[in-house]
Amino acid sequence: MMRRWRGRLAAWGFVALALAGCAAHPGGPEPRVLVVAAAPERVMAEGLQVLIGRGFVIRHADLDLGRLEAVLATWPGYRLRLEALAVGDGTTRLSLSGYRDHRPLVPESLYALLVELQARLPASPERAHRAVDAP
Image (tube, rainbow, N blue to C red; front, side):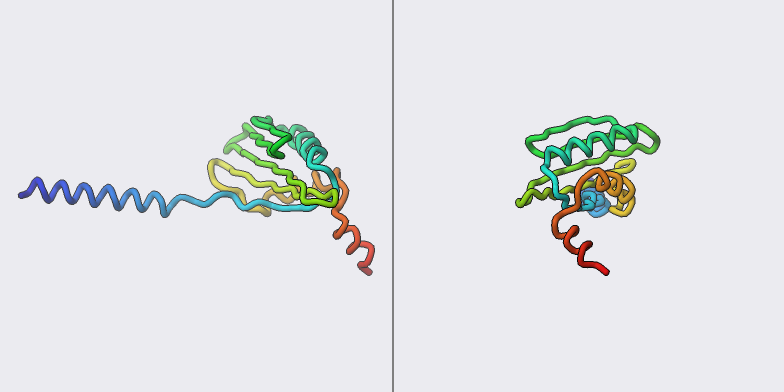
């Protein structure tokens, strides 16, 4: 009788630990998104140059898919993902996200990197039009 209770208790303990592990897992990183007036190939090339200039090592790059993954080997370790997707009319949707020490980076922490990349690329037609209309 006592063995059966121990077995049930152990099984319930395992289920509780498994569920607690699922609840504690953070979601994926939230990306910073920018629309630029450039082809995805140019966005990827400029992104590659910016990341290399900041000391990142490119782990994977696929121009056909518009994806690039880079790592920075400083403590606690950074891993970034840049994606470029053509959205039509010569514009590209640029998405940048990443991890720091296996935890998703908040989008605001990618701001400086995105500004540097944005300076190398033309603004989207909508943004350029609004900038002209602005007082």
